Image 1 (spheres, rainbow, N blue to C red):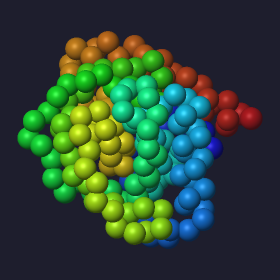
Image 2 (tube, rainbow, N blue to C red):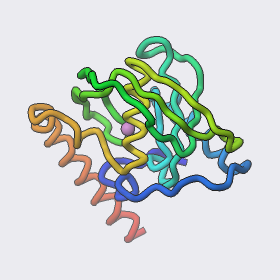
Image 3 (cartoon, rainbow, N blue to C red):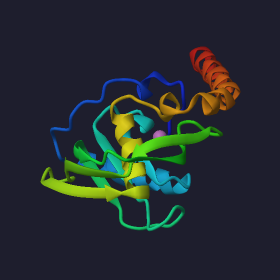
Length: 177
Ligand code: CO
């Protein structure tokens, strides 16, 4: 399992609802956590490892940079959210070198299923809510650069161009190989 990078089309593909809560699913979640920690990430969505299913894992900790409780969500839905939003810096493991300030709801109430398929209800605030919303966007094929301010988009542009060039080179190499 590897983290796929922008502009891999799987980051924008439709993600299927999870219907079988089996050992393979648990194994996928486990491997995603390993990969996330290895890359100093706080969250990872299944499309980022090339699996187009509605699965996300995260561990936002108490504060940025801390490790807390491991959360696995299958088929998450936002059932309520605060009107208030706050801007905060975000990065993404599929966009190395890119960061920007994104407005997120300060609070979200979520319904989802765990790895056993049982319904769970959760509430996230502040940093946790931010991490959740970032990963939730991935499940809708939405990447954080689309939510950036115009200024941050301008800053990100040359890095995105570089990532596109690297990806094109990798495609050519794999076709030749
Ligand atoms: Co991301």
